[in-house]
Amino acid sequence: MVRYRRHHLPGGTYCFTVTLADRRSSALVDRAGALRAAFRATKATAPFAIAAIVIQPDHLHAILTLPEDDADDPNRWRRIKGHFTSAAVAGGLALVPDTKGGYRLWQHRYWEHTIRDEDDFTRRIDDIHIN
Image (cartoon, rainbow, N blue to C red; front, side):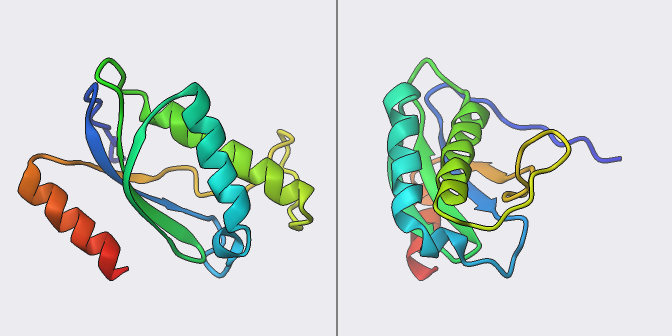
């Protein structure tokens, strides 16, 4: 089994891809307001800067920079996903609770890439603009 390791860099800038479990879903664009609210609520308690973001129907790409003394991107994504899921369910999205009482709206993992330098940053921004 492959062991996935995340690169935790305090103050780092990362490019993320976060995906819904159902790749046929359009929940992210259908509920864009709830997604914006989830980002705002998370930023209020766990700050980060957004350099770029693109929302597709079933996934999003984002470039985020964390505070200088913080490398906890997993906590931020847990909060964003949780806020969005709660708002989507409250707004009528038909999801069946799992055995733990949660909802399987999101894929469990996400893809992240640590931005290495200015050229890497520029390439990732271009990728987001193309999307």
